[in-house]
Length: 395
Image (cartoon, rainbow, N blue to C red; front, side):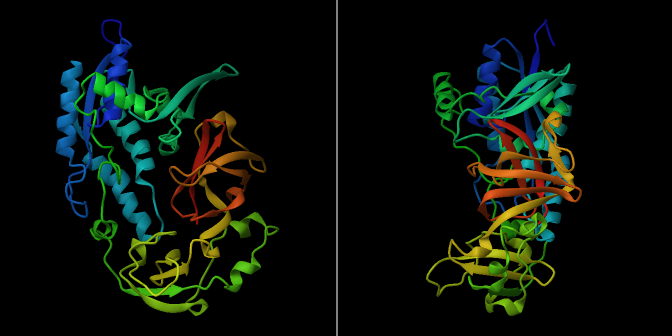
């Protein structure tokens, strides 16, 4: 706090959202400081011309100069590699599909970056996320609620589903109650350099990548079989809605003898459930989709068509250690259950489901079978607009 003003350090990314967030905070009378973080150096696997960090820094500096706010730079690439990228490699090696953006927010933006912001005297850190924070006192204790952004097409609360109360206490989301069109309009009116800049895509701070090439930095190619499983495989008909939760949450287990070999791939760890591209196999009426991967035998199992039953499951499980309550006062105890709205990937429409907490973990039972439930991804559960908790899908 300087001259009686609350100091907010804004993560200026070189994009329009964080630029307008900084402008809004200055208009509201805060002592605003811009901080740009560089988190990635290696270009292996990145698609040429996509999101170069030096361009981002130039745009961030231009915005800071326009707004007449101090500008700082920090290199967090070592923390990013050890806490996000190394985790990514380890998960893919196990045949799981991690979400680096969720990890980046938990481990970098609201941890390593927050520490740097505090060294600059920050009372809060602010980002350009489309989400909201509200505070509520329950039994004399204050809780910070993470709410969906007001723009339904840009809500980014899912990416923050692993934040803690301590992290939320220091977080501000200035554009969370705005529409993207409003943000663009303000940026244009204020003549900010980022007004017409495209939104970044791909892996947080890395950009768009050719995933197999990117992963080959640590995971060597291995030739393996592609096996097609027919839609009439008997394992599908054996599973019933009356089965125990543990059975319904189990992924389908295939063997080479359950289908026919139709091709080869370069490594099961490069592929994920529901993936369509990159197989290079023709001769089918409908597209082929990956329905399972086995990194132990280095086998990919595929099914034909969007409606292939191998793509759908009614339940999932989360290990006890991976259950995270953003709002701990709303946590369920063992043996308890409650209805929530759930999403298992960003931008997926919320799905009606019931969460059960059992001794061996949390189970989510969906009202309708879900396509592409994938180990390593995050399931996030909501009550209305509030993101209450989340967890890593076990299998």
